[in-house]
Length: 116
Length: 110
Image (cartoon, rainbow over all chains, first blue to last red; front, top):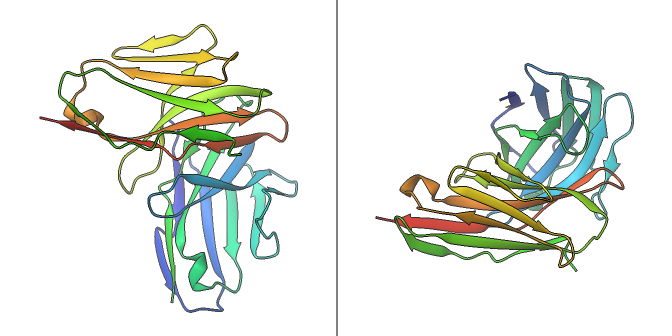
């Protein structure tokens, strides 16, 4: 299957700082990338959908100014958590897809963010 | 109301047992359906897509009931390696959005 990487895999930061997470599709061009958040013992919650070269579509309740998404190329999307707070501590997972809505999403390994 | 609802379990079954999970979805415009498997602290991986006619892959059978708005996953002859969380995923065409269920935890016991 296709490979999606995320970097970093784990990050600890102080409250108030910004953290950037990268999501790369390594062996395919992703027309659409998704960002999810997963709290312990809960399911993935879709945060936003991004298509290359256009603005991300955020889910209700997700602050676009706090979670900045850039999808500059067909192989790279970034999520920046701005002015992080302890409640932002979570597992952030990206996924990528190259086809239509019936195509498989391939998930990255996730980034564990801990905000002190 | 949540877009996708699943019984979180946990389901604890002996090896060799048959186990079934159901998942209901609220949006009748939903177009694509999937079952994903997620192992502890790992990313989800596609187990199988769910087609209108139902589909089978080895010990796994997935079915879709559009009238009642649910999908199901049947696992026959459970193996220890089947222990994981199974996530129901529904894609709503409008807005190109995927929604995940909370997942059903399965533990297969020797």
